[in-house]
Image (cartoon, rainbow, N blue to C red; front, top):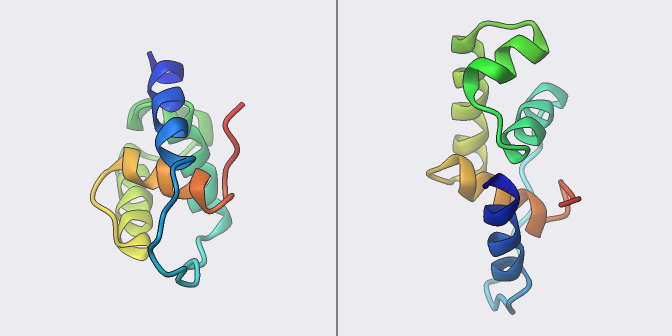
Length: 90
């Protein structure tokens, strides 16, 4: 299911976007790790287990990512990261 969603979002990303390009906010290395795992479809509990951190810490990282990128959802963050070439869909 995650790969189907990513494929659909990849198609959306490839559409022309006439918005002005703004500087990409700097995410920490840990935030990027969390974002990569979100993109793979992992939930907070699985991300926490994989990174050996608490689920609350994962939630904090995701909240920080969304605030820095001025987004509202995990999926928006993944789409943004792919569009800005922070992540690649494989």
